Amino acid sequence: MNSDMAKRGGAPVGVIEDLPSLEAGAVIYLRLWCDGPDAQAQVWNDFRVALGNTQGRKALSAFEQLLNLCAVHGRRPMMRHSVSCRCIGSDESCFANFVAAAAEGDREDAILLASLLARPELAPAMTALAADFGLAIKRMFLRCTMSHRTQHRAPSTLQ
Image (tube, rainbow, N blue to C red; front, side, top):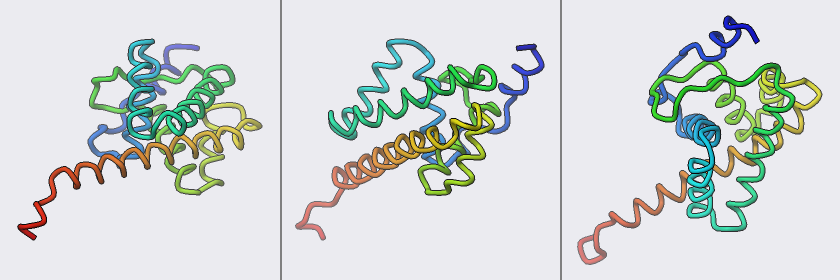
């Protein structure tokens, strides 16, 4: 890979605060997973706590398989920014949009985006994995939101 290709994949295209929660979650978990074993343990813990052991393991498995396909069959190594970086790179943006499209049932768009990341014949399988991963992120946010609302609810005597 030449340095121009790396620059394109890592070129900042936005900031993480501007992303919807699903896309932001996809970027954050991508970065964490690629950051090493301690960060991978954090990803597993997030999935386990939010989804339970069984559903958390299924979500993590889909995520691992998806990233493995990107790593082994990717058009080039996927560029990413550090976990704490506010900006998002073009590869991260593509990955986030891919996961969101798959989770929202936009299969044709998801397959098109998958073909930008890896070999086109893998796009349908990648899309199925991205849908599972993206839906898990959505469930995690819903559970966190519901839990937050329940914890800060006014006592019934004040309602």
